[in-house]
Length: 111
Length: 116
Image 1 (cartoon, each protein chain N blue to C red):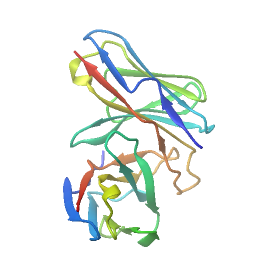
Image 2 (tube, rainbow over the protein chains, first blue to last red):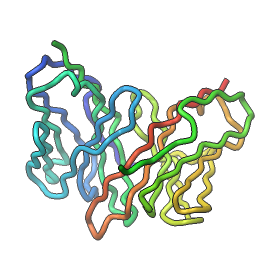
Image 3 (cartoon, rainbow over the protein chains, first blue to last red):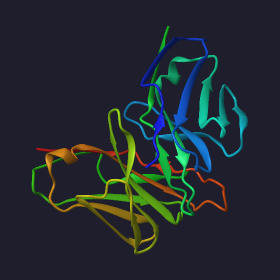
Image 4 (cartoon, helix red, strand yellow):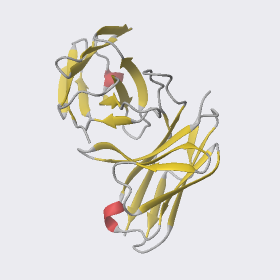
């Protein structure tokens, strides 16, 4: 299947801004979504970009550029509770809503 | 509050045993998914179901089967567990997307399976 590449780990201090990039090798996704997973927890949905551009939801924003096969998740005003793994997932072009997940980025927020 | 529940948080089985992982959702979703999650590999789709008794293979179906007899329940079966099936198993459900749209998948808490 198609693969999505994202960094394995990012470390930042409280209050900082972190950008998690996600690149995919081929086009064909309907859009790009982002999930957050705390240690021991279930992945939870953060955002979805169906169109190119920036989507903002509170402190978190997500961006998609289809022509560049690239997206990112921006975490602003980092808080300790943002320490978690973040997964990008491409929405496959089928009628069932299947997702292709990246390997995940561990975000570590330090005081 | 929407909910996806899985029968066990932790499970330890022996090689060769038949293992059943159960997942129940209370959102009346048509779609249900089974993933396995391993470090550095993200979530990989094992099987999904888009209706009662309907199923499709995902990316890594070998060694697994599924059953969906009721809309709210989706079971993952390891016919003969092997050590390389030690992993975290996540169940999810969603409504089907409309057109080129998207519907979020809701995940259960996961079952950490260890096969000895």
